[in-house]
Image 1 (cartoon, one colour):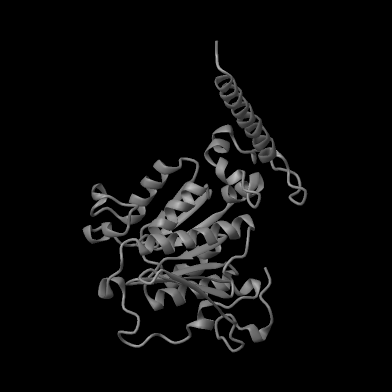
Image 2 (tube, rainbow, N blue to C red; image 1 turned 90 degrees about the vertical axis):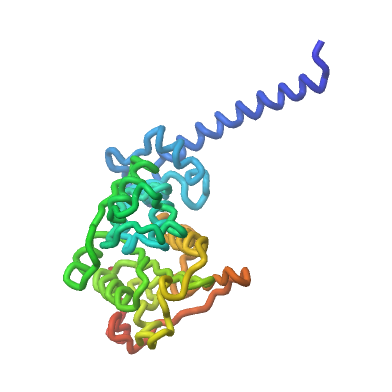
Length: 301
C-alpha cells in the first residue's frame, strides 16, 4: 500500500503538470490576443505554435508578451560590422526573433578572430564574414531573414541603406566609420545603438536625437589623437569582453523594439571587466552640434 508521502508526492507532480499545461495555454492565448492600443491584427501576424514554443521565455515576460514578440518579428535591424561586437549582437538578435537582420562587412574570417568572435569556427576561415554569419544565423533560427552585404560601409550608400531599417547597431572600430554611420542615422531619424571595446573596458550607449537625445557627434566631435584610441589589433582585448558588451547592445535593441524598460538614450554605460565595475554617465545633446543641429528645432519622425 502506498505511503502517505508517496501519495502526496504523486499528487504534487500531477498538479504541477496540470498547472504547466494550463499556463502554457494561457500564454498562447495571450500571445494571440490583440493589444488594446495596437489596432486590428493584420492577416498572418499571429505567432505559430513553433514560434510560441521558441520564444516562450520572452512571451511570459510582462514587458514583452506576444505583442512585443510580434514587434521583434516585424523589426528590421542593420548591424554594421560582424566582428567582436557584431558577432554576439547578431547571435542574440537572431535568437530573439528579430525578423530581418542586415549585416554589412567587407572582411573575411581569420584565425585571430576566433579568440572572441564566437559566431565563427575554423570551418569559416577565409570565408566572408557576412556569408558565414548568414549561414550560422539561419541554423540558429530559420524564422529570421538575414541580408548580407559583403562590402564596406561608405558615404555613397550609408544614408540609403540605413533608411531601409528601423534601427542600426554600430559594431565598427574606427572613429571615421562611427561618424559616418551616425550622420546617416541622423539623416534617416533612425536610432543608433553604439558600443566600443578596448583591452578590458567597454562602453554602450544609444544615440537618438529624433527622440531628444544626443547624437554620436554631440559627444565625440573631435577625432582622437594618434594612439589615444587604439584598435583591438593594436592594444589587445580580453576575449570575453566583446560578448559582454555585444549582449548589452543586443539587450538595448530588444528594449527599443519591444518598448520595454529604459534604454540608454542620453546615458553611457561603462563596464570595467578588470575591476568588475559598472558605472553610468549622463550625456547631453550639444546645442551647437553640426550634425544633428538641435538649434534648428527637434527632429520629428
